[in-house]
Image 1 (cartoon, rainbow, N blue to C red):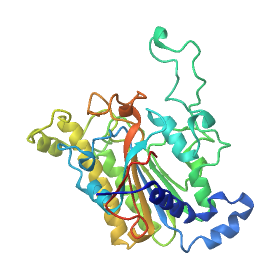
Image 2: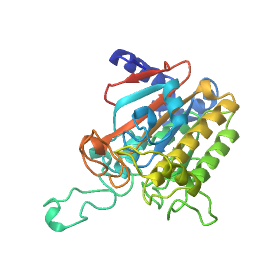
Image 3: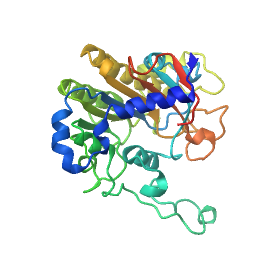
Image 4: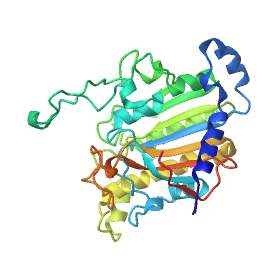
Length: 329
């Protein structure tokens, strides 16, 4: 895999930004932008994983977890080896992703309250924290809607459940969420599969217009639960010193199947060449389920293991395949 220079990286990012010129237009221009937007706009797919560690993919070094679909995504695109989440837990990172702002600007510093845990271990003056994304902030889906995109939030939101903070209030046309009490639904389906099916349906229904799909999986967040038949497969497989949890490995395989299904659907509909796909995690891995070695720390910590994440981008014909980039992003 060849290296990408800083100049090449900036060129790639500039190309992606230039492909959606209406992102910075004012609301007064929205109508004319929507009329122009049906041609020449790339589809955008975010596949966002919850608590996936830096080395939890074969293409990032794991010899135990099997991720052939994600590995193919990596070989067809660019791998970012120095990608960093904006925080070591999920809500702040999601707020940064959706708003384009750093944490001190949007005010979502942590999940819930910073006054958790033993009082003697807390800061003397806790950081003021928001549990939702300020409704005055213009979000990425709102900007993309102005540019003529159909938008969907499938899966975890975590930035407010009441008006005006819900995803349907923040620019998403289609919203599919489930209250997660474990990774199996009441009818026995695996949640990763349910969210994948809804994503495929959205792609199918919007094949003839530019779309933004935010597939935000609950996996591989706790509880560590997976399909029995896949767990049995990993029980029989030789594990490594760092990675040795069959159930967690099975969760990763189902996640990989999801990525494969989305990419296959894009291929089937002839949309791959006009679709930029981003794959990334919201923070480091959960220490009791996986290992970030040789990185120090894990989810919840500001060491490398808590904020350094796997990231991949693919856009056939625009992003050179088989590349890696060590420029911090």
